[in-house]
Image 1: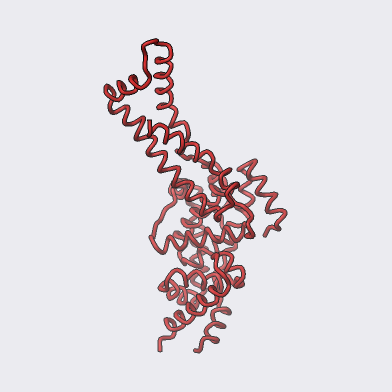
Image 2: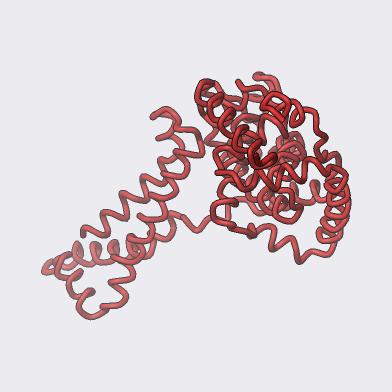
Length: 136
Length: 187
């Protein structure tokens, strides 16, 4: 069979058709119900910023207080808590949000910069806040 | 399928109310499921990949931007990528599918659909033997052959779906077709 005959046979062959799918309606409902169960939430940053806020207020209202001394004390006396709040949470959030931005960029078909920034501004904000915590 | 005006109206509606996604889902689920089913030739895997495809579409529809491609092309592009990923990694089981699989009604519907589509598959012997050979080709040939000869799409639309220029597509098609011919009719 030459290439033209082969191509004709492929074009003319019958293929399975999908005319009815009983699971379609239920799937549509469930998919909409399951919307956005993402764990990539800005609220994960609330505990470390709450602690920082408390330390800042303590430093402001105590005439001899120093914010950075309080921070060092916290790291010294609450080692695991400090590592979780100031390294683990921001680190994980930076990774998840960077991955999310990359995925959105490709799935959205490489959108224009302004439209893209509008779409991912929350992810960028989370990364910036997490960076502040990490660099502190 | 949707015109450009109704496409943007529907997108606007989904942006305001995510439940309107159901309209888009019902428009495209059957044709996309058909495309995935004809590429994979297995009901359970096709269902899994179709659910994964529409989960991705639902999660990312608000980022869709009209840059010369229609929603239909974008949806085919995602479906094609998901099928390719399946062939590369044999990754299976979308979480939603796993959760739904525990629901009696859903399982009952799935069993009905499976029985009907498996019977439908067995009616097309030539297609089944060609599909077996297509699956042995590299993924880049599989997708062009499936879109051209299983879905009957024109080169222009295939080039849009795969984000290729028409020249590259023609050369991929011709090389893929020759490889397939040799597999089907070994000299």
